[in-house]
Every structure is written in structure tokens, then in C-alpha cells.
Amino acid sequence: MESVTSNMPLPRLTKVNYENWSIQMKALLGSQDGWEVVQEGFVELTTTAGYITAQNKALKEKRSKDKATLYMLFRVFDKSSFEKIASVTTSKEAWDILVKVYK
Image 1 (tube, rainbow, N blue to C red):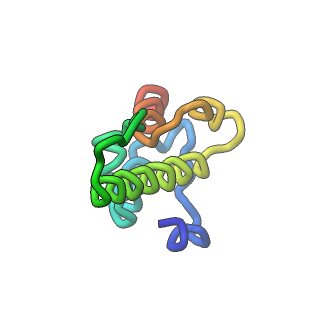
Image 2 (image 1 turned 90 degrees about the vertical axis):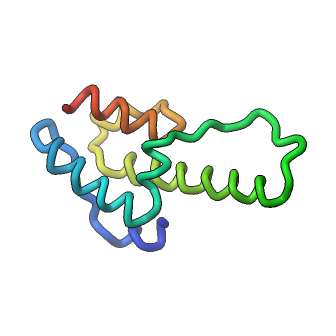
Image 3 (image 1 turned 60 degrees about the vertical axis):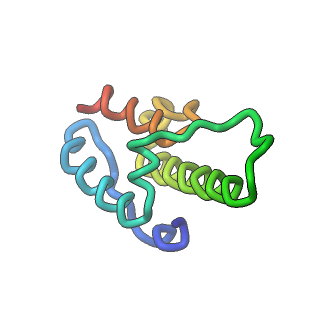
């Protein structure tokens, strides 16, 4: 995901552009297979005992998508706004906070 967006400017979120920003980000995240993880959320498991190889691979892929999406969300803020989501660990948590703060 990051290789496609690393050189692409991301839409910046401000106090007055949430609606337009969220439409653009949903499209961008959707194009990078990240919107699904924002909607569904990602829960880090405490153990994968008993998981077969395919399940471990799927978990790793979902974790990677979530972290890449979270990183993209971190990149759209200035320092003062970033502090609102700096402590979250999933992209869903970040998005939910953004909806509360800016919508």
C-alpha cells in the first residue's frame, strides 16, 4: 500500500473540510484496500495457538493493511491535530475519533 501513496500528496484535514476530506480519504483508502479495515476494525490477538498457516498469513496481511492505513491517517495532520489520534493503535480507532472531532 505505502509504495503507491508514498509520493502522492494526501488530502489535508482541517477544521472546515471534513466532509470533502472524508470522501477523498474513503476513495483513496478503498483504492489501497484500506477502507475495509477501517470499517471492520482490527483486533490484535493475544495468541494464535492452533492457527494454521493460512490463518496466520491472513492475520498478518490484515495487520499490515491496518498499520499502513493508520500511517496514512497520521500523515494528514499538522502537529496539533495529530495529538488527537497519536495514542491509537488501529485505523478504526483513529477514524472514529476523527468523526467525533471534525464532523
